[in-house]
Image 1: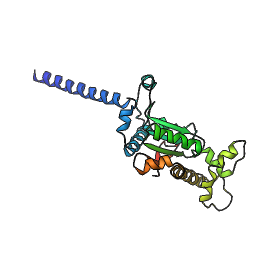
Image 2: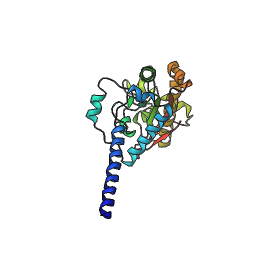
Image 3: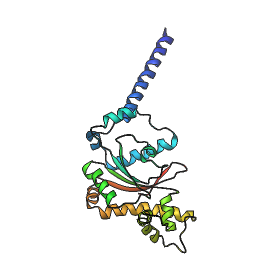
Length: 234
């Protein structure tokens, strides 16, 4: 009888623990509302993205019901962060940060640079929609960065790459820049991401005001396409 009682108690404990884990899992998949968004600070938003990338590189991403999230976000959204990333197919922000529908805004453009249109989008995401964190996410082996290093000329791409070339000048490279120089390409990618943060803070009074009172944080980071790991610059 005693062994049977102990067995039943053990089963009850396991069942209860499983129930708690299930509840936690369901909570992790809940979409953000204005109420839950309001509890997030810029620092906690950053930590959430860091933890999400850890899950991504460990192969422990969340398994959420995306159709349910689709329905839950159909009439409202309240993302906690916004990511400015490259259009590169290997760096989708929602996946590398292990986030789901309604969690983050994503502005994507080749070379993850910032212009007036992107700034306006960031102001909407923060001032009007309540996001607490802006991340400029560069990545290794970026084609746009390589194009800027080579001063590539091709239709509208020529003008687009001019947004990146000021970062190249800051590196004071000796000789003729080339995408064959892998060290240069990575240094340029790093500098470009950092310069985008500076541009956000200097060209957007709206965002700089939010940052000054601690309502928004603006940081840059680099995604390694070979490992999935994200390195944070600030």
